[in-house]
Amino acid sequence: MITSDATMDQVKQYYGKILTGKKDLKTNSCCSNEILPESHKALHVKIDHEILDRFYGCGSPIPPAIYGATVLDLGCGTGRDAYMVSQLVGENGHVIGVDMTEEQLEVARRHTDSQMQRFGYDTPNVDFRTGYIEDLASCGVQDNSIDVVISNCVINLSPDKQRVFSEIFRVLKPGGELYFSDVFAGRRIPESVKHDPVLYGECLGGALYIEDFRRMVQGLGCPDYRVMKKRRIVLDNPAIEAKTGMIDFYSMTIRAFKVAGLEDICEDFGQLAVYRGTIEEMPHSFVLDDHHEFETGKPMLVCGNTAAMVQDTRYGRHFTVTGDRSRHFGPFSCGPATTAKNSIESCTGGCC
Image (cartoon, rainbow, N blue to C red):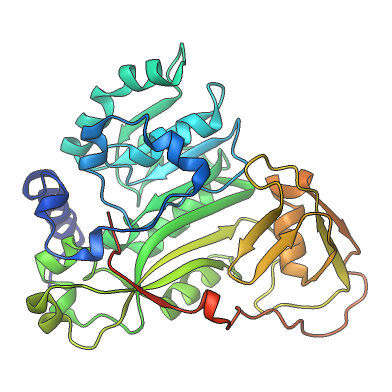
């Protein structure tokens, strides 16, 4: 049986010594072809090439409306997402990057001065810390101190995911947001796959079964999370496919909030929400998840959970919500969309 310490050492070795760039990856599970949002493309071109070449991720987990926020990037690696967020939070915002791999952090830190000059900042607003995402207290992240936690294809690498999510909800402020991309599986991973060093390093061996993830965060007081994107991963490696068998892997982007009063199913209280169109990068509509898109100025009937997500978070100033929970009308039909637009699609990437 491989211990947690052995797993961490194995991951450090893989990302610190074995991988020197994207060319060393064995599968597409650590290399996403996801197109960056238009609003992020201008940020991306300002990041040094060495940072980009050693970036491994499965999405673009950066939520909107983060100007002035304190953002924590779990498993920041060489800092691609941290430096993109640096530009979005502004010079008075703050970004903390945490990673356990010194070789990755050395790249991130070495480019800090040049990146701040490129962004036009007099004082760095990024802070890269050596530490474990299972123990954020050890690297000085306080209770209720973070507005937004992001992570890009890293949580799957942790041998103790329950502790990771427990730490996330500890450090988030009330109303704070977790917004992350990762590799998930449609079934539980067998031991033979879980303990294969290459499969683990390629973000497959540690992939969470999506229903176990649901149960885990529910047990931590988060009964409702929302899926932003979900795509089937095509491994494109016959040898790896032979080892993983019929396991279906997905690249998913998920958001969750530290909001009191959320329920485990959607309930109808007759509430209406109107998006004001005041988020700069989203003037015409606001996408909460894969089945809620708020058109600017148009009232939408919402469940109690959705009302709380857009009212009791930093998005509250951008919405008008009418109604409360004083009168209940039964369950609310609020399931994920089943249209072709939102269905699972094959992709050639999951983690870079």
